[in-house]
Image 1 (cartoon, rainbow, N blue to C red):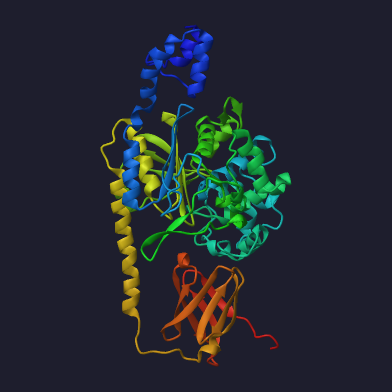
Image 2: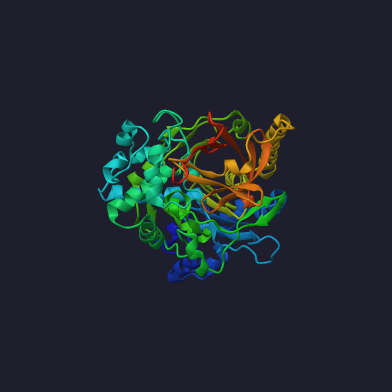
Length: 529
């Protein structure tokens, strides 16, 4: 065996390990004229690479049953090679079509790292700096506070330190486009001081994505396709649900409705795409892992400069720990956020990761850079913590100590949290005052109510019942609760319920309504008044 080939096949430990894809191994050996090496090396090399994953298939199959998750796809990358790529379960509950390594899922907020990556490319080209104010590049950008409007930088936007409350109803199932959403951000009041603490945000990622679009003259979608998907060979990845019609191997989202797992329709979130609209499969996402673990290099080509790649994995703001989470993860002591990535320690290693949750799907991108290890888990179940459990399990396997049953522990943790949440409605039920009725006749509550941030909601009387409508998706029937409080049951069962309180003015006329968890809406003057 020649020296060049020998170097590629042997690690510093002296044990024979083939680096790269299987077809590259055979090409290297064939060029060296050593066919016998196949017999000698493959039996020792493949187990050396895959040995930590022994038993993982059975573990995942059992976890899917325990968690009632219909399907899942997993890829594991180590030393720039795909060690494992496989689908588990089914694409749609009650149907036989299996999940494969090519099945497309939504990756949700794991898309944020792609938006940070676009800004990184522009930083490398000298077109922008991380600490440039957003308003410098995005005309008309304005926050609630004039000082913050002027000072908020791309780094602030990408590291969740804007001080803003989430304001997700501004984009979720709304009819506003990207420009209108950003215009209305000026009406969103902050929850805490600028740069004082971590506060997860989707609107600021939209601002960062629109900044990239403004600088280049191309949409965020075009930029992601041209600057990231194409160079990495991510041929099955898209930035919109509108593109899924052309694909055959696509999973259906699922959620729990009336305590039963059921499939639901994909929800289009193009209006906040830079925060979470990418759809992909694990084979494509493996290329994203290779780029991140390669410190900006992919297949020998520089995508990001190494210094720029490292910058995205550097802490920008501390994330305070919570007692309940600490009880589950005592090996984690510090948490922070970089630029599109959560950062924490685990068993003495740095973990770089980001989850994703959007209607009916949960995802996780997870890396242990010191071990040159990365994995992506995509599932077709709403808000499940199974990806986190599996990430810890697989990491433990590679670190040589897998005594903890992470699936069982996370599941117990999740059920305890669900039990606490279930107790809250009971408290509300106990506080309900019986024997009351609305102050006014139902038709008097009908009208248009408006909020400068969220726009209009309509209350109408339909067949003797009040109906509330906010945009196309939020349509619900109002049931009297007590006094002038009603409970709205959204007709889309995935949206759940909420309480609506009417306030009367001095003339005993409806003056405003409050939708719990959203905002107050003042009654608009009737036309002709």
